[in-house]
Image 1 (tube, rainbow, N blue to C red):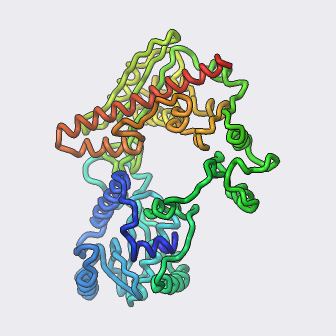
Image 2 (cartoon, rainbow, N blue to C red):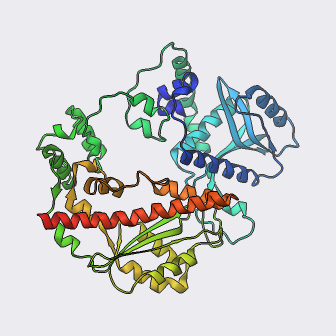
Length: 484
């Protein structure tokens, strides 16, 4: 899999693993979630036997697997260890099927048909059949997005969904065979292949060697990647012209309206501002309620009525701004292990007034309010009334202002520092939504009261900064209009 993404990644994995950037806590949490889903999936095939051993203990793992394969009393094998032509795999589940086996690859996802998952199964299929096993079926087992948790024990037959990958595995067999030969030749070389950085560094996953490969490279200050939503056709056209920097894009090159604004701002070194910015800002009605939710998406639904990966809002920050500049803060953070949706919704409705725009940045808060209204039907009317008052600042910025320091992004974490230089998230322990969700999940699972309390305070500080950011950004935009 590493070699198919980039031959240099494969070479590094085999010979120079010390060059890899250590996994972040967030990435490690994703790995841990996958492990937990895999262990739960094993229970869907009862009576199986786990092949243990550490990752580097290949020989004993292979020997143990061989014994289990030969024992007709074993209905399934978990983490079977098999090697063929130098390719070693650990199969999530091998299920005995008549005179052969079914291969099951487990993924902590809801997308069994995702090509990278099917390819993972195809490589294992190639190894197993090459090692002499008869594989009747191959599939990718994922969580079923339509499963609604009723409470109690999970119904594993309904929680998981098996997507068939048999034909894909068979179709890929010859190609994988050739690829393995090519990789063996690659790994027999004395020196690593010379491969530059590019889109392949991030697809299908971010390469752990990207920092090493890109270290010391002379990158343009304004690369064409900073053009908003640069599609493949325009990217290829610019590359054909030898253009790597926005500064060098010909004035007559066809760009979208937003991309042309970015080009003009970069070339001039000055922000671009629409003459309609003041009118757009005036559409917000006082008092302004700056709202931000934080949510987590557990793979396994923890509360009745929930689905796999359903977003659960657990926190909000609300800064109410009056026309005279007076600012009042309200917040809620659910610190118990119980379902946070109802108490959070009730706290939000209590904090909101009856009038004034609710300022948000992106459509996320609307999604959360609609979901709360669906899940709490007795509160649906007042929650949907809040949704009707939402006023999104993101399209206002995107349509009416661009600063070269945005670097092609309209994320508030890029926009705010460009307009309010001293503002930001740099000093906070938690500085982004994914980290917030992870911190919340870990705090709920911890028995350390000091750790929990500290994490909850950090979460409050982060969410409060998100709504203060909107207050500061809106003030800065008003100031630009008044100045000019």
